[in-house]
Amino acid sequence: MGQSTSFFNSTLDKDVVMIGLDGAGKTTVLNKECLNEPNKKTIPTIGFNVQTLKLGNGVNLKVWDMGGQTKIREQWKHCYQATDAIIYLIDSSDKDRLDESLEILQSVILDLKPSQVTIPILLLLNKIDLIKEVKPIIRKDKLNFYHHPHLIRTCSAIDEKDLQIVDGFLWLSGQLKPEITFKDFLLNLFDF
Ligand SMILES: Nc1nc2c(ncn2[C@@H]2O[C@H](COP(=O)(O)OP(=O)(O)OP(=O)(O)O)[C@@H](O)[C@H]2O)c(=O)[nH]1
Ligand SMILES: [Mg+2]
Image 1: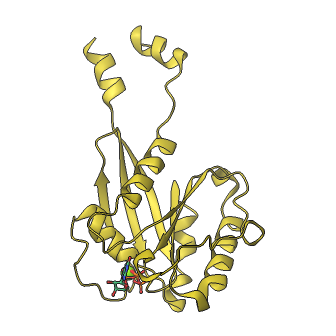
Image 2: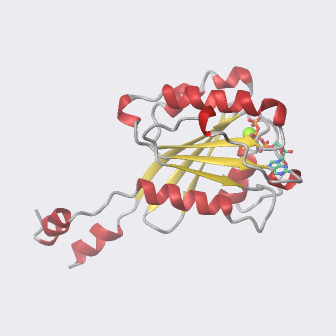
Image 3: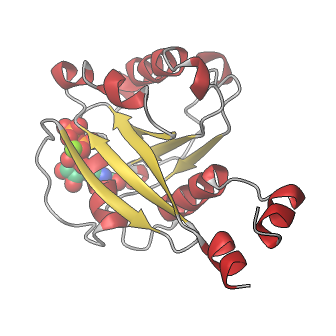
């Protein structure tokens, strides 16, 4: 009995790489969700920051916040080709770089390893507080997620009341939690 409790209560650690163009708000998201400090001042990330988010639902997300400046983007590949999930941030108020940002996301999706064909992707359209009129900015012909489960959310990382981001993180953790099959249940019950 004790064993089955620990079997079903065991916590998984999963890697999540957070990428997007410089200034999209990645570090602000990390500060908001992992440190509970949405208003903490940020500086451009050189390299990466990492924090573990414990959601209390059996999956701990180790979130790798990568710098988005052009030079640093060369380093993304080493991380996204080894990750369990991707969070991609877009600054929705930066209309001039929207196409560039979508093209980069598309190239990342196409560059994932065959073993990653179904890793989940959370697309956060950030800085929604700076937009007067919320219109759909992602056209289906501009972005193909192929077989990746994906969720698109609009959000504001500086807004303490914004629940869209945590909702996205919960969705990711749900995607990363293995389904417990009846066979697993029986094997655990009889201690195989
Ligand atoms: N108005 C508004 N500003 C935001 C939001 N999210 C982030 N910012 C601001 O945008 C600026 C850049 O945010 P960062 O979190 O440093 O961006 P980043 O994606 O980590 O940038 P790099 O580290 O250079 O890749 C900061 O001044 C943030 O306060 C948001 O939702 N709304
Ligand atoms: Mg940063």
